[in-house]
Image (cartoon, rainbow, N blue to C red):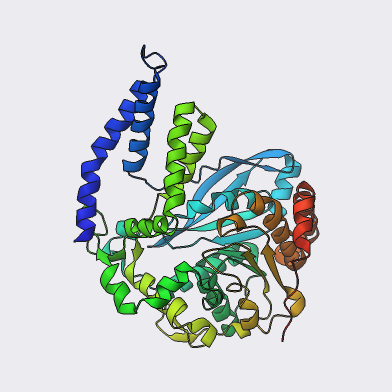
Length: 464
């Protein structure tokens, strides 16, 4: 019922938001004879803020049209490689008519970025994708809004998430021989499970596995997010945050954790900061600070765009990761597509090198939660395992923004170079190693001071 009430309210507010936008444009029009009056400017700014607070935020585009590879600008074509009921595997295909650049593009290693399914769209990793495209073939999991998936497409469980990841890894292996995997936040757990199951079966596993800011062991340094999941019962979540999709969407009748409830939770974590940001936006409109107002719009266009999560997947994640800690206790069983339950054994991973990354100030996945993967993956040799703590970085800072570009990305490039040059076909091994080395060198050269600050923190995790 709550979902229907929310949708009714949103439908009622939508025309008022549109009118507020029109009024803001009218009052701020430079040709308006009274537009330079301070009072009129405040009215225009007020309407502009009203529009932002009342508008409906839809899924943003990645919008990556070009990137620079070396000193050459290459074109990007975004396309769907594999379409599943609840996810699309997207590739960002790079094109160039420069022969040397084209050869370089062909030799660079393929990377699967597994985006989080935890409220926001995969476009939240836009900066991650754009930066990785400078030296890698990039694929990303683009999770669908569950309210747009008809009931006829079946259910979606945490097991299905793990099976999707395995299928996408095999897809890249079929094209390139092997690949590298990067997981950001929530997917660190299902990605570790996916690679573990592949290793237990004797399948080829990815060359490297980079896990960033995820709850491998949510018991360590619990944050407000962890505390909510740990202190409320499974029944509480099922009775208080799960609703059925209303009739005006393709997924009518599907049980979901609605995006608007998730967004309320996001804002409730830092209400004062968001209120201050909106007031600053109002003041920037008054000052005519176009750069600041545009930065605000871009951030909140992404932040306010949320998706519904399938109830089965969400509830199972709460129980498996944050309440029963099945991964760290060694009790997690995943059903494969044939329905057979398989035990997740990270200790079976031997040939995949592992890099874990945490932000010093991460308030979503606390210190030590991601690094706990080293204790689980005991069969990976110490010289094939590394941990990186990024000084001064919060949760988003390890995959987006200046610290991501200047500190984290160069270290990932180095790690892939050191542990994954053999990804290329035999005839391209030497070219691939040279190409990746050049990209890593250029990335480090662009930020020598930043990389140097982190060097002391990047230490192999040794087997105890």
